[in-house]
Length: 539
Image (tube, rainbow, N blue to C red; front, side, top):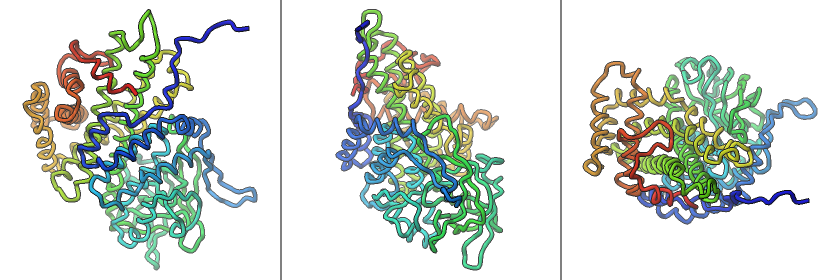
């Protein structure tokens, strides 16, 4: 018997076009990669499609499984994934979201890649980890010209070739990173893993790594103590002679989120590695990789912010309560508009950072801006993601708390970007370190934000406040987060005032840079054009 009628429920948002994002497409053209719009649009339709959304759901509901031994007792150290993980990886690799930009000489290749990563990441976040690692390993690997010549073409190959074989025999490679140890965490100089030189020029690596990203990768960059100090090494899972390198996967981490992706503890049992960079220059060498993954942390958080805003707006557009659609009710409009503003600010500055990455090699000013802007933005955008995800989830009410809404997965994923490659304090202190050691970064920062001077008095006042904060060196480490937060907000405000939608820029300056904003999302001041802002999140 039919006991009730189903009504006032929201239709599934899929299929939808993830790339229908004005801030993203405008930034793509502004930063010199308009030529990639067709591929970004293609990925947008694919990422928001019912099939890709289902791939993401099942890859998380069936996380990877570690197989330490085969049925006969041989040690194999392999990670088994759901088939849809490989579908997600194949799309990412064939569209060049991994190392392909390093082989592409067109201007704007890193901007194009950022836009594609942002777009495809809406399908599933976990597999972005090995994709990001593979992208980031290339500039670090170039510290050893012989290794770079051998492996870089394969790291940029648009062929996804999963399987345990000697790297040079494969059609394409995936890379991982293995830095931290249980006693040190972010303090990698406390690492105890040792590297002993061998007559053939290789090193024997012995030690335990507490977090190894993507242990099924073909190769890893790792840190170990060599005779000359902490150094960077490349280890492949299969050695040139075809034998397996003794890299033992001890266990997979049971994580808060990022369930589809494997993170592990590993043991190096006299594993073979090759030096990348000079002995004692391990941090300097691997920081090339860290800087690239930090950009991807910003992109990943920006993707989550956009997803949360779009999903919340879609729900509110179709759900009715107390006689009206949620999206038409003033309190909810305030919340939704605030979520959209946060998203657009992140996307706009993300694209600016990608543009700086493209130009840094030829333009010292852009390199200096990238150095400081990436640190402050990584801190702030990634720090905002968990609160944003929680508010977006709450827009659904109880429906958002149910797993099938997809919002809990978004919420669990959000904290990772703030922790990855250095938590909030590490990022904030790194920004101070950059300004202290490279004064030109401060000049580049003020040159960038000053391009927006005179457009909004609230922004002008905030720029002046940054100057006062930096002029006061007392208790500067204690004030690190306060300083970096303000710098990040000013940078976002400057980008929005110059390039964003006028309603978004005005609301951002009135709230984030003004004195009329509360603590929670949904505390925008009166007079904000919520209609124009919300229109940008309706797909």
